Length: 557
Image 1: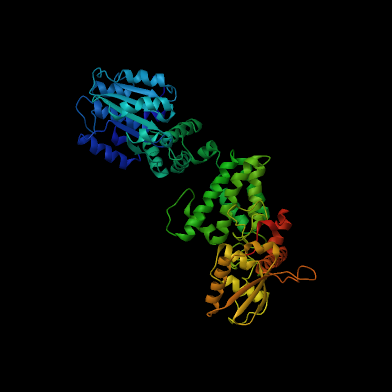
Image 2: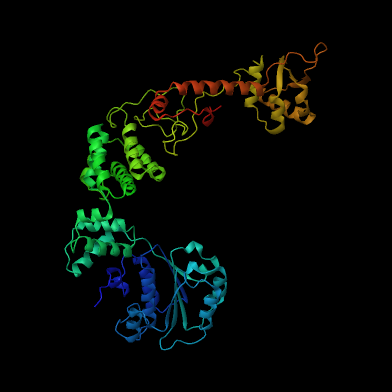
């Protein structure tokens, strides 16, 4: 007899054999046992989680000759025919190859006829999202009100591609990805039944590589059995999957944390020689940093891909701030590696970047560099040598996109005038205007007026002819009311045009608008000067060839 792959040989044939979908199974079992049946079921989920298998079990439950129940006998002719894929009343349709509306209409023409010998005629449509829009339209009426002898079982990996009109007519069940521990336990059960020896660590590697798909896990297990000539061993499975020994990864990160360039180069060379997929290794680094961060915050976290002992050792050696930085660098590298001249160069640059950001001493103990007072308080003074998440990405293209472009070097503008009557110069008028409760055109008018005189009762302002179009009795009255409210007594506002008999224009004093522009320019210049002298910025420029981009940050006013 020809060999049958494990994924087909161990395909579940009843609800008890389904793995990892307990909530959905509970709903279906209750519905079948109480005979509360829907006419259309939609099973969604990623590849290999059991959508089609569940649909076939449902078909057996509905058409078993013993009766409708959640436990089909598996021995009657109908059950055997469904298991063997030759039941005439179970019509399986691959929507990927039957996308045309003509195919759908041909199917629907036969809906009116009763089943040949079973209780129901069941249409199992796999990858239903591949049907064309016209096919869905042709299916809608039948899907909503099918004959009593018809049941629809739909399966798809892309439920978002289904029209809402189809979704509303189906009872939907979303199958979740299966946990690696559950997959590993099931693989161990199968190997015991097959009388094959295995190492649990190898099954753990396979279950994680399957990414929640039981079918993928069984396919990888088949491959591992062939690769190991009947033995499923950890080292052989690592080699088959192109993975690197975890001890090499641990030693590499430890050498970086301890600032040991000789060991770093040694372990990096071993990894690049043994790994068949360095991109996968970069993802492994991200997962390592995640588990380190997790155990630093939650000491009782369950063991993940890596052993708890080495993880705890690294968690003590590397500070939480550094772990966060390393995690961001490894994620960013996964975007850069496809753009590198080769995958090896991209991966080695990731390691060099981790080492370079370690600066010159242990990450857990390095004191923070002196941060210029011009940099915003958003940059924590307690950061290790790690680059603050608030520093502009214009500093270095290598820094994570999470780094904000907003650098705030500025102290705020001077407070409003201390005494309501201390209104003696353009700066006092500018400060007072900043505190007034006016907006819109009234504020525009006031900001383009220069201070002339204030005697405690009459405030005299001047405006250039170019801006005099702002003047209107209503706007002047609004400004006058706002100033009166701020000064707590009634004042009279007079606005004059800057005309003079000698040269048509008198010497124009600065307006609040002009003062604000000058202050912004001064603060921007100071921010640029301070950042050019900042030790963190200087380090990045010297080591990465980065250049400051003044347009990428601006002071807060």
